[in-house]
Image 1 (tube, rainbow, N blue to C red):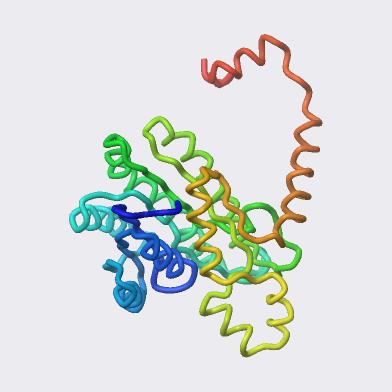
Image 2 (image 1 turned 120 degrees about the vertical axis):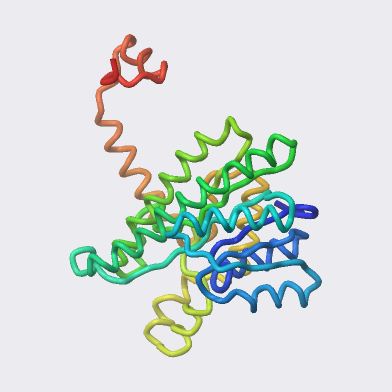
Length: 281
């Protein structure tokens, strides 16, 4: 979205990282910003205020639905409505799937998958009201290039990768479900981003710098592309050219598998087109 004057943007996970960049970008484009985070987001609020913008924050744990519902209600109470939910809060964990502690895996999935669902569910009534009044209404889920395939230039982060595949599924399903309500849903799929954590890793490890820097983007660039993608109506907002080759390979592999399926007979195709499940009589 090129301009966000007279709009309200809610950003979850806006204290640091991509969320902070999204909050700063939204404010720079004219939006009032409301942040939810388990971390203290006052520094982001202060940065927005110093630049002449308007922002507030509230503690919110995206794994707890009452927290998310309260975040939505407080944003509406404070600013009168919501135009964009940047459903961004998330976490990662390195390692192959069979070496990841199940309790840690549960934490990642709770934030990255259930947290996204909580955001979609809690904010939809308010976004529906916004759309009904003829105003723009969007949900931007933060996925990853891991939503597009398994990046060969990244070490194993298998539970994280699985959670970001799920984020794509949530986005596509929500886009279908919410389109009749006037709400557009997109997913942001960046690669390596020079967030505070990644920048610190690059700065303290030459090996990490060599591994990451060739593929890294600045967080401000990613945030700008996010809102430009929303403005353009993109379902998937990919930001990093380094994602293209492996994502295209993954897409071709998927198509090759799908093309092995036999074509439907005309009567079966008609049944599928009707939207009826053949197992539901």
